[in-house]
Image 1 (cartoon, rainbow, N blue to C red):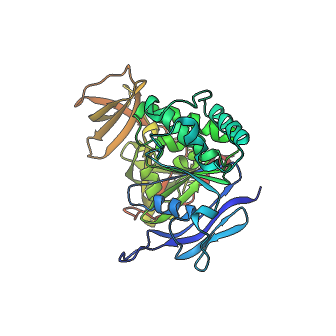
Image 2: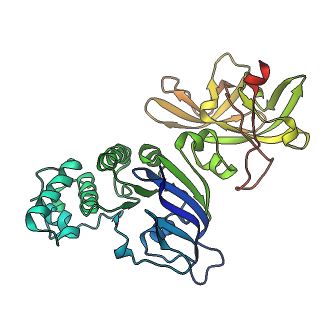
Image 3: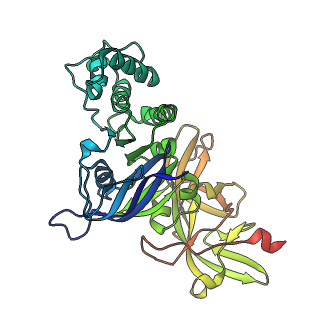
Length: 374
């Protein structure tokens, strides 16, 4: 399937700033896909969204939408001519208009019967059928967000942009609404680009997720790849819970072993070769789900912090040697802060980086040890 939205080497500069807000970003979305941009505050994700919308001019590169170049150094199609819908964090509903007239705002030129039919259609799509006569103040935050989504979908935009649409909602509602919105967008056949700072939202809604840092797009991939196959040290650190621990890769005959503060890693499916680093010295990524609580394990760690997550705790641990680790533990293993517990590593594939490398450092390529053993 051809790319519907194509961003190629896009840069956006603001006067007076030494570095571009968006710097050489490339990504693509197929028709019907949902993309998500995530990253820390000031990373450029909202600027990129605004450039796609036509609210910011490109200083380099290009944006192509359904085969039409809408932004480049020499071209700038105005926002109102791009047929793009937008959903904002504050919903931007008109308080003096009822739901029906809010949703009809962008299709007021249609004949009345056609307009009313389209309003009823999109309200049913977002689960608010029959609420045309309600006013925004009579709705919950989640309902208001769905009205804003219905209003954006009503004109049948060729692309939908959502800028942190759940940031004003409570945490429990965000992830549930993200799943609901994904279902709505898929039912509508919409192509969408979404900005959030919340990883759970990104995982819940996105087919593809882009991790941005200081104006650069470090990786554009699905959630599984971001977590298990990070393209840079920044992605490895930003996505999920984990730490970098000092390690050394050894070759013992035909076998590869990785020595870590938890001892050697065992039964790995993939691992870089020692030659990837000088003397095999590196930093290994240890996710919270790579560390298993085991009372009988010889390695002990002290609980520094604990965060209750309902079905589990997220423990932050410190080894006697000083290294800090994290682990997920079932919530019936309720240990006290300061207590020492046994832990061991269960790592299927090893992700390593240059010792003390920068945010853009890539991981060393791993080899398939299972095929090498056979």
